[in-house]
Amino acid sequence: MSTQRLIVGPFNRVEGDLEVQLDIAEDRVASARVNAPMYRGFEQILQGKDPHDALVYVPRICGICSVSQSVASARALAALAGVEAPPNGVHAINLMLAVENLADHLTHFYLFFMPDFTREIYAGQPWYRETMRRFEAHRGEHGRRAIAARQRWFELMGMLGGRWPHTHSVQPGGSSRPIDASERIRLLGMVREFRAFLEQSLFAAPLEEVAGLASESALDAWVARDPAAGDFRQFMGIARSAGLDALGPGPGLYLSYGAFRQPDGSYAVPPGLWNAGQQALEPLDLERVSEDATHSWLADAGGPRHPAEGLTVPQPDKVNAYTWNKAPRLGGRVVETGAIGRQLAAGHSLLRDAVGRSGGNVYTRVLARLMELALVVPAMESWLGQLRPGEPWCDKAPLPQEGEAVGLTEAARGSLGHWLRVRHGRIASYQIVAPTTWNFSPRDAGGTPGALERALEGAPVRPGEKTPVAVQHIVRSFDPCMVCTVH
Image 1 (cartoon, rainbow, N blue to C red):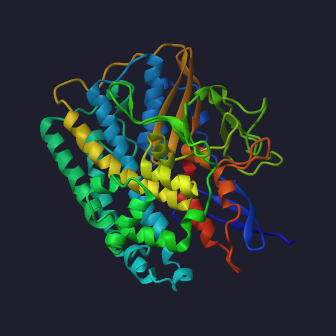
Image 2 (cartoon, rainbow, N blue to C red; image 1 turned 90 degrees about the vertical axis):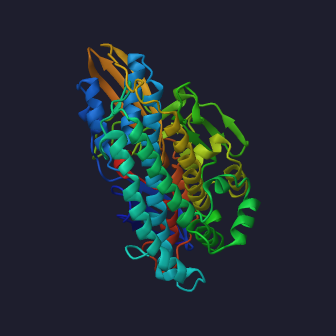
Image 3 (cartoon, rainbow, N blue to C red; image 1 turned 45 degrees about the vertical axis):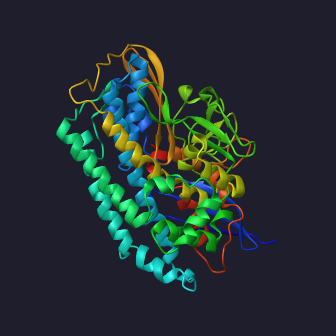
């Protein structure tokens, strides 16, 4: 059996640089290696700095998820200081996270994922002409509407945090930007404007109706009542027609660190590891997190390391390495993270039903993001109602001269962790494990491929394809952010 090697990349409509090496046999991907070819070195830059300086540096890891990086860093510093933010600060930070995450979901759907279905290869499909009208890159009518809605949406961030990206109001003790009563009313109006866009253009239905769809049969019946109404139904028709539920299978283990922590310490979306094979939520054990650098252009002395003891030392000439990304594992197992992990951990019945039928795949990853849009906007309205102008927003957080801590959050793309060690009042170690680090990891010491590498195996490759459309769908379903991956 002859094997052809194909390099796909650099990818367009992806944050950062990405290449995928494919070995193709009998018109299928036999194996894949995912290469993050850019090194940035934030973990080295932070060494020796004052711990508070991390709040200035880490938002600049990425211009898309800078608030998430800020929150993870602030939580590590808060744990080091032993402080908790007041309720106003908790709600303000959750609102900023939600703005950023939902903007990413919207961007992913309208500008990154759906335009791939306007490729000429799909011209014979009955849904092609309407998909072109809605989603063609730069020209699609609904894509342009989404850009306008996104621009208006980020006005919330200006009021909540002063600026975006690189918002500096996120602090260990809460939010340094208080909101008065009149601003709260304006914020609520902005959220309801975004709700109107979602209910009119994306879902063509009330958000609560969409969020309440409890099974795939209920979803299919809902779509069948008016198949042309809304972009979500258009996606569902394409997903069924193109077999997206059989494309890009996940590892069966789905990670969530817990999203939108509440003032009482609970989470709106709980932490845990959903085991699809066992149909069970396993408790999250951070001590079992490790990073393997066997196939990374990084030193791997001592084998896999817990991030608290992590090492980031470049070795660009290392034999058998093919990426700057490390290979995170949880108890030695490959996991996937993202909206799909959050909703499975939260017990959303539609997502558990869909993943129970077909597993993690291109269809269920996109479905999870769209469901989060319907779920989180009403939660934001509730958090705004719980703000108490005049009460504290941020407490002081003096730091000790020595200590170790971890800060966790859920970015749009999944679980983000910052592991911090301070010695003599300075950062001695700072290790970051980002969502795309989990999803786009290389092989580990045992040769086990990461989540995307495994998901690409078996993907169809049409004769003559240089950028196989199935590979594009699978890669985009994970919504990669490569600049976060390599810090």
